[in-house]
Length: 278
Image (cartoon, rainbow, N blue to C red; front, side, top):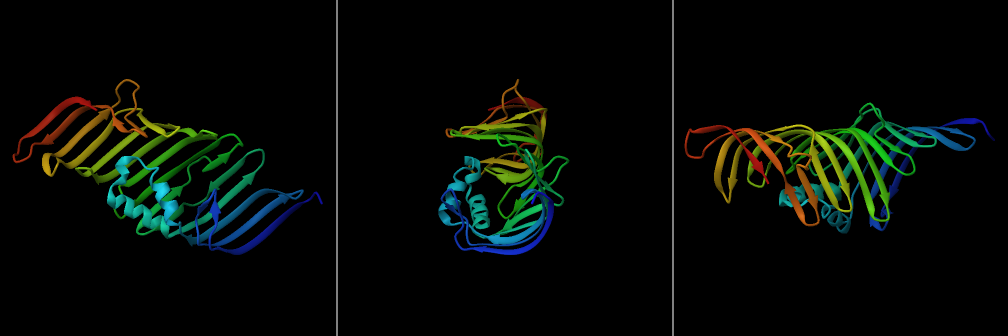
């Protein structure tokens, strides 16, 4: 009756049309190996591994992609992400779930979601990857995203907190970001930044803690080169966000310092420039 029990399980799970809140995520095929620890009929902890594959229907993919900021609506990015969501593989090699007054999920090794040449990986930091208190979702982790048509992203999230309600979700997170990309007239760019992100009611913002470093091989407008071999520091303007995203579009606000570049069609290099970026 009230004693402790340890349960070992190995299961294969298949579902042709699983759904969550009306969205279909099938077909889904999973293999799960787990060891559960129960007390008085209640689960206290679960150590598990999970591998599988699945896909989302086109309506669900389109709705999820519509949530991305406008800059991510470039054709090659949409094609890469939609292909992954329509046919993906998931691998969680070793994780632990602990249940008490709160629920903790820890990863002992990186978890991976991949498909269509795209790879998303979540690795553990010192804190639980996810902690659910009943009113708030907290977490921490290191995330990398790379693959066909996508900017290369690597960011650490030392802390994240999110609440959900009738008006949607809101939250905040500390971020350390490194990205490499070619996008919207900027070729072979690299950006390293550290700051604080927040979101609520369809609005999102990222505020720098300190100056970020930016490098690019070339910047052009309407096919005409503006500058090459660009290097600069992007610094916060007072306490204003570097980037804001919302239903009305996006906005960038920063002050660039120590900028240098080579002017097109010449060997002239401009250095030490500064100014506002809006």
